Length: 137
Image 1 (cartoon, rainbow, N blue to C red):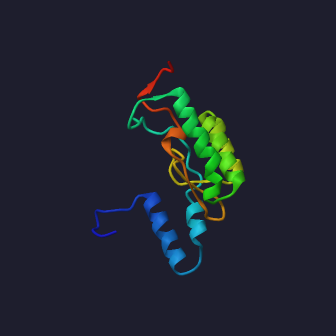
Image 2: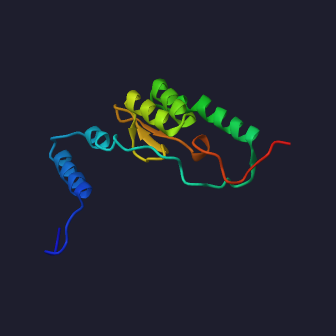
């Protein structure tokens, strides 16, 4: 806290208290992650790919990612839920991650965890279209 005029925000104080509880063994790191699970998801900020892409190229990149992602760890059911959420509108996507027990670390879904603590990282190209998307010829 510091000076008399300073104060912690409500979220900062809770996070600090939970960190202390984790350090002395009252809660686990998974409990800390779970405390963040009520985050509302949102669309990623606009982004630009290093080179313009067509919809076909973007679809191929997405398919390749979803086909290989489960091989890098985590549960296939969580990968399937993340894909469904990424391809849905925000309301349905939120319902999907909530019902699957996905712990949302980054509200744009780029970083998530499952209840066992496995980390799932999603590239922006599976979550939204780049600003430099071009028409297929």
